[in-house]
Image (tube, rainbow, N blue to C red; front, side, top):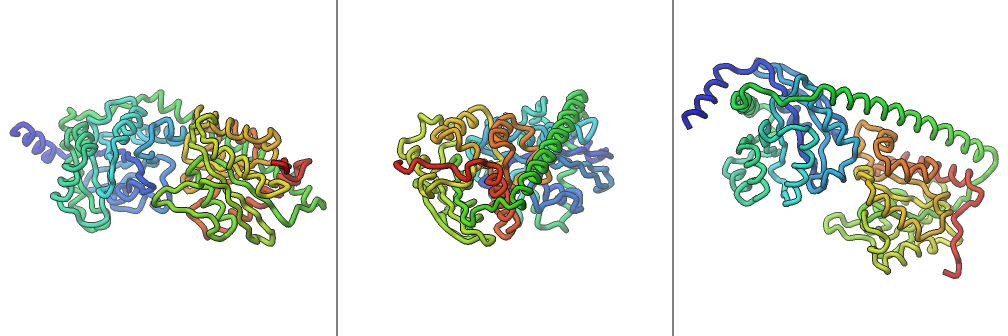
Length: 456
């Protein structure tokens, strides 16, 4: 005890003039970790945008209690997901975070909201994501508990006692922890104590920061430059393609005033929610609380943007299941979806959540389940990316170019894709543009719709 007290006193008598901090953490059940809010609190300024998800690592600097403090905010991952499910774009940004505060961070703050209910899956997810830094991150880490209301030490200790996962995390971090009530921005004493704990950690680590491989930083920057360049080329190709098709629709090739649309894709991709946004009404049952899935293909109608719309929702397959692993009932229902709008759909929307990495198993699952239909289905298919808010400042083209699986799917659909923000039901332009893209696809096809076998 005497030795640790000496270290603490040493840290206080020689406060660091510069502190470099990287914020890390995940999301749980769609609740953000609050890293950006914590960063703003520490720096005493609203320098990080809290209105949208952090999709790009960003560094901000302020003078705080006579110290030059650099804080790096990073994209979060889903707490329960293995690293292979995290999009490559997010992994690159997380890796790059340590290169934004050269020569390297003194501390990682692992941000965990006190209200989080963490499962055992978090242990492997955390370890896998921390491996992105190629260093023993735990020895530089303090667990930062956050809340938007006062929380006593007793309550936090009780939370830790009842959570084996939190006990494990704290054990890995040498039991270093701090609490921030991020709604009380006037209480700067919370920040002062945190900076003192960081200085104690620096002293304990022999005044060393986390070592960073400069060559890796250069490689990451080149990778991001190349990716942005490819994304820009894809965007230009799509605009040229759309311009050409628009000339056909304006040149007299009149589309049907009744569009028939079928939605297919994996479970929990947001198909039912998407159908409701397109139709502008709650036609399909969406119950996010008990995670009920669609079990039967369902049909609904509406008039949107002066067009009559028929939209068919269908059961999803488990996102990495082979066709053989999908139940016969689900397969029949998926096959039957196109038969509910005879003589066939003008557009099939292949619904893909933008926040999920399309690795080999996922891609194989898409390919096999699309084989339930004839090969011609692809000519009438458009990739509909859901959870568009996940992109943050990134473009969908950057997301596509960072993922080989997505490139295969988008290329198979001849560069037809659209992004939908399922949370923003007020933005009518996203549906208007989707319908325009469907009409452009219709104009470019020899066959106006995917013809179903009526005897089916």
